[in-house]
Each structure stands twice: as C-alpha cells, then as structure tokens.
Image (tube, rainbow, N blue to C red; front, side, top):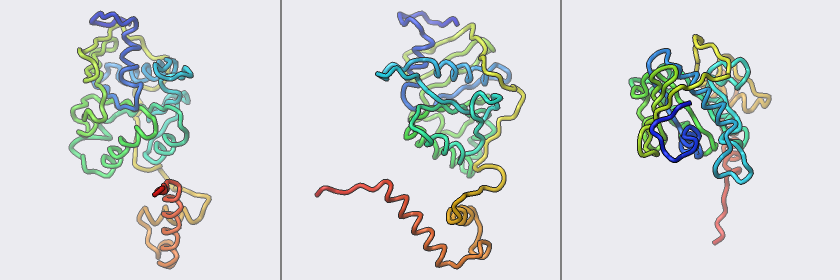
Length: 255
C-alpha cells in the first residue's frame, strides 16, 4: 500500500490505525457507491486483529474480537440488532470492533428522533465502557445522525475515492493521509447483500427465567391483562429486578 505524504513514520498505515483505534473510538467510512467501503472496513478489521497494541505490555493486538451486521460467511459473528450487540459488547472484557454497514439507511439525520436512531446514539457512550471500537459505513457520512460526526465520538473519517484509494481526515493528525494501492480484504462477503439492523431481534424473545420473561413482555408493551398477572405481582417483580441490578453496582461511603 502506498501512502502520501511521506513522513519519518516507518509504517504510516499502522501509525494511522494506532492513532485512531488505540482507545475506544468511532471511525466513519464514506464514499460513492462501489468504491469498496465495506471491503476497506473488513481490511481494517483483519489488520487490527493482528497488529500489536502500542500500550499493552502483554503484546495484545489492537482488538481481539470483531463482529458486524455484514454477512462474512461465519468469519465474524453477524449481529443485526441492538440487544444482541449490547450482549456481545459486554459479554467479555476483550477489546472488540463492530463494523456497522449501511448507516445511511439505519441512521439518517432526517429521522434523528426515531426510536432506532435514539437507541443507537445512546450506544455511543457504551462503546467506551465496553472497551470497544466501531467503524460506521455509508455513502455520505454528512447525512448520518449528527452525534456520529461529533469529535466527542468520531476520531476520523476515511473517504473512499476509488477501489484502491482512500483519504483520512482526522483531528488527531496534522494533515490528511492519502492511501493508494489498497489491497482487497481476504474476508469473504457478498457485496450485494443487505446489511440489516433493528432495535430488537426478529421473532419471539425467550428467557429460561419466567420472571424475566414477564418483565420483558411487559416492558415491550404487554398489559397485566395480556400477561394474566395481578398489578401487585408485577410491582414485586419490578422492585426485585431493580434492587438486584442496583446492588451489583453499589458503593459504600467510608465516612
């Protein structure tokens, strides 16, 4: 891969990836149709899974797990809803990367107050807590929900100009970086397949714990009549669930 402008940094591609992804971050990829945006995101993922971190004394890589709403034929988990994404993010303390494709469809600024937009924007703060990174792909990043363009979350934007050329714009570097002769990813995927994403999984959600099943169904619109329980019984379940969850994060004052 050829990179301009020339600097004293030995591997400018690795330098840029370290700069963007050493800390929990969101990076955007934009560009016209069929310029290889998804292919480029997957190339970044497979590079980061092999690239040692600058700051980890144990020599761990920039990320150790990756997932996406892109179907990679089993190479990476395919996650297509917010609930499953949260479960994956918090399932372990490993450094994770999620590639979110077709953001122009799922996160348009003209629907900023839609339920899905609000829920995904709320997820931004959780990316940091989960020690995760996110790559967001779309033809026009300027049309994404504005929160994704904020320097608070966004560490840079790659503009894919052709299949083999991309430019990085970031407040973390003092000039744009242009990458040429970009190789294709080795990760197999269908470039014509839809990359779906929704607020919750398709179909019925089941819990082994019947109390949790009741709470789930109630929180998603079912009434006490639908659930065939008394209001006091639901009240006890809610109190118990809230108490148990709060106790996992309790702190005591020493004074």
